[in-house]
Every structure is written in C-alpha cells, then in structure tokens.
Image (cartoon, rainbow, N blue to C red; front, side):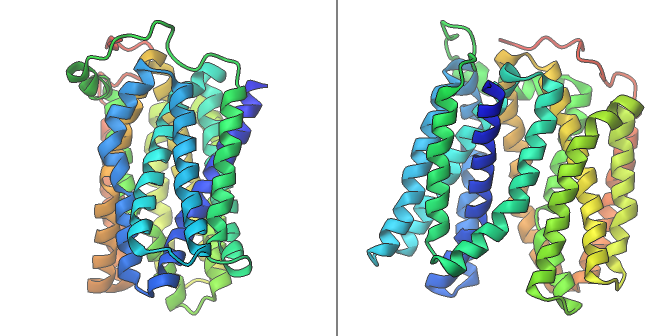
Length: 399
C-alpha cells in the first residue's frame, strides 16, 4: 500500500513538473513575445539545484524526510497557484514569473532529494531505481502534450492550476504513507562543516560510484540542449509540429522500455559491462541522426538512444541505493544533484552557440566526437582494478 501511495504521488509530481517545464516558456512568450526572456526564466529555474542541493541533502539525513517532502509540496503549490490567480486578475508581471520559477524549482529540489533518500525505505533498491525511472518516462510521455493542450484550450495559466492540484495530491499521498521514511529518532545533530562534504567524500571514495558520476555528468552536459538540437534538425527537414512531437514521444517510450529492461541487462552481463556497452551503442546510434531520414526513423533512432540513457540511469541508481547506507543517502544524492545539474546551463548555452556557428550537422558531428571519447572513457574507467562493483566496497560511509 505504501508503495502504491508513493507511486501515485511521484507520478503526479513528475507530470506536474513536466507540465510546468513546457508551460513556463509558453506563458513567458505569450506575455512578452521574447525568446530571450523565456530563456532567462529557464536559467533562473536552473539555479536552485545548484545552490540548495547539498544543504537539502544534509537535512534529508538529519531531519524528517516526510516533513521536507510536505514542505516542498506546500511551497510549490502556493507558488504556482499565484500565477493563474494573478493572470485572472490581470496583474501578472515578468518579475513574478522569475520569482515563481525560482521558488517552484527550489520546492521541487527539496522534494526530489528527500524522495530519493526515502524510497529505499519503501521498496528494495533494485525495484526502487527501475520504478522511479518508469515514473519519469511516463511523465515525459504525458506532461508535454497535456501542457500544450491545456494552454491552447483552457488558457495560458491553466497548466499551472493542474500543477498546483498535483502538489496537493502529492502531499496527501506522502502523509498517508505509514512506513518510516527517515533516520531513526533522535535525529543526529547536524555538523554543517562535516555534513556538507560527506556526500562528496562517499561518492569520490568509491571508484565505481565516482566513475558513474563523472560519466553521467558529462552526458547530462552533452544532452542538456538535445531537445533544441532535435527540433532544429527535424524542422530543417520539413517536419510539422506534430511530427516534431512524435520524436519526443519516441524518446519517452524508449526511456520507459529501458527502465524495464535495465535490471535484466545488468543481471545478465554485469554492471561494468552494461555501462560500457551502453556508451558504445549510444555512440553507434547517434550518427543515424546525421542521415536525411524520414522523421519517424529519426524518432525511432532517438527512442533507442533514450532507451540506452534510461538503462544507465537505472543502473546508477540501483548501485547508489544498494551501496550507500540509507542514513547517508540524502547527502550523497544532494552532492550528485549538484554535480549533475551544474553543467546543464552550460550545456544549453553550448548547444545554442554551436547551432548558430556550425549549424545542425556540425553540432551533430561535435556531439558524436564527444560520445566516442565518452565511450572509450567508460570502457577504460569501468575495467580498471579497484573499481568496486559489489555493494560491500571498502569505504565506510559517515553517519
């Protein structure tokens, strides 16, 4: 029952997040007509994970995770509700959009880190990682078209009402979960100088976790602007708006399938081989985007790439939840969120600059060169001695 409550709450949270991601730039464009302002609002929303992830990770290990999740949902609900209210009263301004983008992103950061740390308390790590990835795949499938439909049929502010309702539903689900989600009471006293660095020490102290973190961070940087690149690519080939959307639908389906297959693949060939094979297959498939193929073939190719990315996400999270003690998981997740999110703004900017300088084909060639290097690095880093592939390891995680 607790897992079902978590699943319902997380699905609603993820769909609400995806709806907001699409609706925010649409609303900014509707109000200002300025793509630059839309980009700045997105940049503001990228700041909270960088600033708050590590301290929130500390609190997730030193305070009630349930309380953090509830606070995150309440703050998120209030912030996004202010947008349709202000829009209805005709007093919505650009500064309010900036504030709401920052606050709602901060609330989502609090919820996600506490949720990730709490999840192994509800289900075993090998189940938790795959189910979590399925949830985000479903959200990516449902959220964007829902946001567009609501924006067109119910008004520019309506997607934010849906997100606000999802926050309330999440709060109810979290409060209804009976399982203890955090550390045993009394909560350990916070030592900020030590606790703020604990996540980094644990992640860097385990060779395989360090390797997975580096590979994922570089991959996140590389693929931060992939949505923009794909849109430019298929639009240059004469694709309609609907056809462009099918490419992203294929990616969501690929992510769902990858999350379902990840455990079997890892069990069959092993964690290190799975990581290496994933990177080489992605590097091998990516050049298909260079060919002048029908849009549905491009979507299929990108769906398979998304499948590979999803597999690695599940493998990394399974390993993370299995090797890090639950009492330290919040701090490690906070550090990983900081590292992996840190390159996203630069990745967005780099993709845009490359598209402007060398066009879509030149950008694709640049992506492929990095993917080949990354695949080689994955093979080398996961085959060396001392790479701990078992949950035992030899690094003691601080409490």
